[in-house]
Image (cartoon, rainbow, N blue to C red):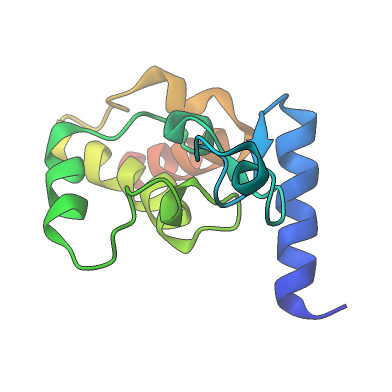
Length: 127
């Protein structure tokens, strides 16, 4: 299994465990024949692939970019690197903008990974 196939398989398992509805790349096409094409690797709702919905500022930045990540394909893929970037750096961006040493979005701490990062940050700031 190639590294790419492995990542896709792991992300598919994550989506199934969390009850995410997935479709192919053309899942929103009005033609049923087209809608059924491709691997079922894409969420229907972008927020299903993110820890937190995009802030208006981040949405504007992605819309201004050339990657067309918000077109229903890019960031909607469970294996999307841009969704990974938003999920990881979005937290730190909000954390830094809060400026008071507290997590700006309580829901970020609902996952083990984010709880770990929050705890590690608290320990760093306590020193």
